[in-house]
Amino acid sequence: MRRSSLFICLIAVLTAVLAALFVHAGVLRSGGRLALSEQAEMVRQYGLTDLCIFTEARYTRHPSQADLHTAFQDHPLSLEHFPSGSLLPPPQPLKEHYGPRD
Amino acid sequence: MGLVIERQRNILDFALSSLARRKGKNIALVLVYAVLVLLLASVMFFTHALRKQAVLVLQDAPAMVIQRMAAGRHDLIPGRYADAIRGVRGVSGVRGRLWGYYFDPVVSANYTLLVPEQTAPDPGTIVIGEGVSRARAAFPGDILPIRGYDGQLVYLTISAVFPSSSELVSSDLMLLTEQDYRRLFNLPAGLYTDIVLDVRNSREVPTVAAKIVKLLPDTRPITRSEVLRTYDSIFDWRSGIVVVILSAALLAFVIFAWDKASGLSAEEKKEIGVLKAIGWETADVLWLKFWEGTIISLTAFLAGTALAYVHVFLTPAALFEPVLKGWSTLYPRFRLIPEIDPYQVATLFFLTVVPYTVATVIPSWRAATIDPDAVMRS
Image (tube, rainbow over all chains, first blue to last red; front, side):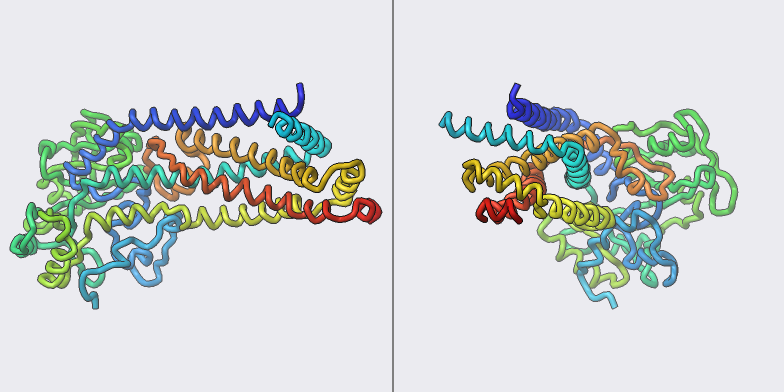
């Protein structure tokens, strides 16, 4: 068998695998709608505001509700030290406000 | 047409033979390349899926949360604030919310305690999330002691555990009654953690927020759109330490690939000279180098992308888990629903396959345009 035929077969197989994974994603997505709607219902029922991803600190557990100076926690020299803080950009409300803050 | 295809296949055969002569080096290159694509694609898949899921799940979050600020910090808000907010035109469904945190010294984990407005459990009982159940090995019917403000243990019976399918929002959650909550934290009646409200016309939300700040200057409104935008930006794959680390890896690979692809060795230059001397045209040499670049980059791209899908959606994203876990004792186990953006895959393709192929072709073009005699003698 020619080397080029083997290579074309390899690329065809890899492309087919990738295409199959895309189809798999579609199947899982339709199956996951129920779980999503359950979660959305909990959010509506309990008035939740944040996803439970990082439970290590207040401002990582509820980033959307975080204080404006959360990176410093409880006093000015208490510097941010939680690893997940490196993943989180400043909370959105920090960038916008509806009135003077001073 | 058949002739063109046959010609390209012959060049492809030659390119594969040429790569096979430096088998070890090229296999190592494909592996490193594929791992890099795996990392980049994993970050893209993970963050896109999480962002999409956050938007879908949090679209029913409260329209606005009003916090009271004292000395720059979130403070308890008196019930009379709710009465004042009810008077703002366009506002409806104003209610005080009770929620907070409890650090469990037994397992060194933080829980979120919440008093639900509807469907509250019976007094003396709690509903817990799957993560809490796992951490404490506690199940319905068990009694969970919680240390109150005065150091006394309050014994609460677990009435139910949230299903594991909802862990992304409920893993560390504990639902309890208002009286149990106030008893635990010695919270006087009439004080709440914050106030939530609905706004009849969603376009009026910013106006209502501005009116509330004017009416109650020590408050801070957080709107639903801000919550959603927070999540939209939290896992922006361009931000954070993951990308810094990945950028370093990417830069190292770029240097490696550039050196490999662009710095033609004397042997490769001689090979081009011989090919031209035996009658290959410049275009054929360029096709040869194009195929060499494509074989490596396309194989690495396809393998890396497929592996990234398996890593993120079919396994618990083991490579990211240590970073995402951080110091959390209680880490939710959730399986992301696959959301793949074709635009992102196309971007990844153009960022990985195209530059490498171009970096292979350009220096060869320089060598291929020089007189073969000069190339072989140099």
